[in-house]
Length: 394
Image (cartoon, helix red, strand yellow):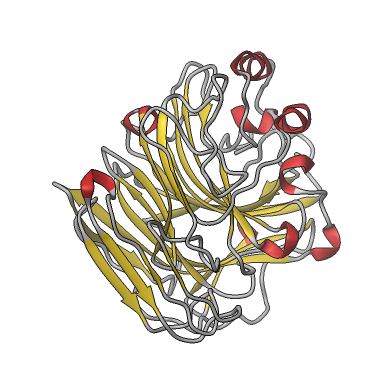
C-alpha cells in the first residue's frame, strides 16, 4: 500500500503502536466499499472500470483474506490501486503478506493516459506459482516466489474508493474535486483448475446481487472517509462507488458510456503460451503494435497485438517484454526469483539487502515505475498499512 519500506524493524515498531479506529465521531467525508460474500482461492479476476480523479483519492480493486487485520492473524492481500493525483495517470500493484512485520511489494506504474477518462479492463491472475497484473490485455507485472506461495487462503473480492491521509503516497487531499465516482461495468471470475482458467461467473451489475455483494459501513486509521452504504449505487448496468462530503452521499448523475462494451480478454491456460489481439480502441496511440517473444513463466511464449483508435500519439514498439498501457516503448525489466524489480527506471533496479520483498521474484513490463520517499511515507501514514481496512464500526 505504501512506498516500499526498507527497514523491517521500523515497520514492526510502527505496527505495534497501531489500533483500529472505532470512529465514535463521524468523518466529514464519505467513501464506499463493496465486498464479496464468498471468498475464492486463486483464479483470474477481470473487471471493467473507470476510476476517480483528484489528489489524495484512491480507487481500488483488491483481494483480501477476511480477518487479516485481527491480532495474531497472517495478512494476505493483492491490490490494484489507482491514484487520483496527477490526473489519475498512475496506479500501484501490491501484495501484502505476513504477521507482525508485513511484507509488501509495491510497484507504481505509469499508465500513460488518465484512467479516469475512460473505462479499462483490469485483470489479476493468481495461481500457485505467480500473481500477474494486466490492463487492457497487456501484462504489466508478474510476481513469483515467497510472497506468492504465502497466499494460501481464500480471499474476498473488494472495490473501494477512499482518501488516505498519507500525502507523500497519494498527494495532498483536494476536496474541491468532490464528488468523485468509480464506475464498474462488469466483473468476471475464472476459477483456476489444473493450469487452466475456467469462467465461473460474471456480474454485469444490472442490480446489486445481495447474495454476492455487501456494502461496507466502517473506516480505519489513516482513512479520511467513512465508508457509507449510501455511496454505493447501481445505475444503468454499472456499479458506482462515490466519494462525497457528509450529507451529499449518493449518485444521481449520468453514468459515463463505456465505448468498448465487449467481453473481456478471457483466459486460457495459466502460464501457458497464448496469443491475443484486439481491434478496439487502445490507450497507446493512433496505431499501436506491441509484440513480445521469449521466455515467459515456465518458458511460455506470449504475443499480443492491437490496432485501432487510441488516446495518444502514433507509436510502434516491439521488444522482449510488453510496455505499460499507453507507453510507447518496449523497454522491460525482469528479475529472477529471489528479488524484485524496484522501479525508478526501465532497467529493473535490484533491491538492496534491506528490501522487504521477502524473496519474491518480479517481472515488470513497461518503461518506468516511480516510488515516493519511504521515510516520508513512514512518518505520514504507516498506520494505514497495518490496520488498513475492514473493521466494522461499533
